[in-house]
Amino acid sequence: MATQSSRSAARLMLSPTVILLLVWMIVPLAMTLWFSLKRYNLLYPDRTGFNDFGNYTRFVLSPAFGGAVVNTLILVVGVLVITVVLGILIALLIDQPIWGQGIVRILVISPFFIMPPVAALIWKNMFMNPTNGLFAEAAKLLGMAPIDFLGQAPLASIILIVAWQWLPFATLILLTALQSLSSEELEAAEMDGAGAIQRFWYIMLPHLARAITVVVLIQTIFLLGIFGEILVTTNGGPGTASTTLPYLIYKEALLDFDVGTAAAGGVVAVILANIVAFFLMRAIGKNLDA
Image (cartoon, rainbow, N blue to C red; front, side):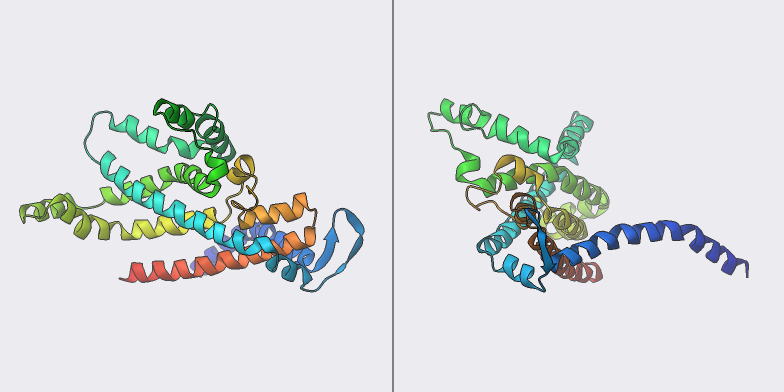
């Protein structure tokens, strides 16, 4: 009886927080769905009315939609490949007993504490500037012509910037998993004649599988919404070369002032993100059951 009353008291105390979270999530979603069904342009506030699914049709059939979806997928996959591969290599490196190990770890995680727009501006002006950036100066020293990275390879440049930001997160997760590996297992494999590559491939990598799936899932959720880096570096250009779904929605809402189409784009983006998350969760579930 006491247990039942304590559970009721716990639910009662938690209910305000749960209600607040539900309102916080449901109200914006409901408003987005409402505006997605209306003809609502900020330039013509008097020309409103229900548009059924016309906003969805306009957004999905727009010339920039297909390219935005492809660019979003390329961005996510590119950043994941770089952060997972380099994260494993850096985790293996700083897991070794080296001098100044604590300082090295602080330097490795430092990019994660820089705000995304600030990091993008640093890369844009200090590294990738074709006139006086560090990459341009290095090219001049080597007798080569400087490259306008953001103009000639905008999407690849954004992938590099975002990967630099998310590399510390992947490294920390993978390093934690690596340190949980039994040293006795590695020593036994070494005594049996297994080389460094064999120990990594058959012992370390399978042990890191769960950590890798966690990194992929969490990063994918956040990478699908990357926006600030694109806004302060390329503005989705040249043309639509670096336009992703979040930036396309921003363009519809705040550059074209079409709130209805932008809301429909937001709903489409949420649906696509949930589809991706569903398949990722299934893949992770299979990995955890194995």
